[in-house]
Length: 180
Image (cartoon, rainbow, N blue to C red; front, side, top):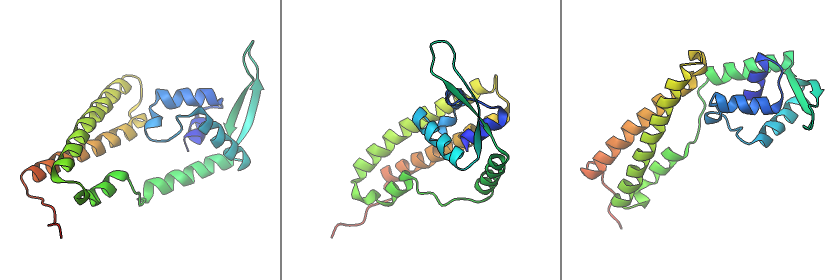
């Protein structure tokens, strides 16, 4: 989806895609941080006729660069994917709720320790998101920041929840089952 989306802007080569992903912080929402994963994605999109080679060029003392462009079929599938992902909530299985479901396998103090560490990390993440949003808003239209706005709301909500959970554990409003 990220590769197809970038190719709707203009034909480009994989290195430029990698730069844009980094510049736009898309690596926070799609896992294409390894350049090799972009090439694997391009190979699949080529096989499926969703993109085609636009041109091949070689600059002095540099490897040959292949530039790709999106096809009409690629535009159609991108729209289909986006419509489905935006309109239909997906059942996802993130690690944190899974870990919460097995919390009684730790002692209360171990759980509080781990959750307190999580609070610190969430606070750092929230600060980084705030900084990214502030910086991004100086040169990007808001439409290019909505995923960061969403992430910020999700991280803030999780932070609020974990703080309240730790408070409840410390006040013994949540207790462990008795050991048999």
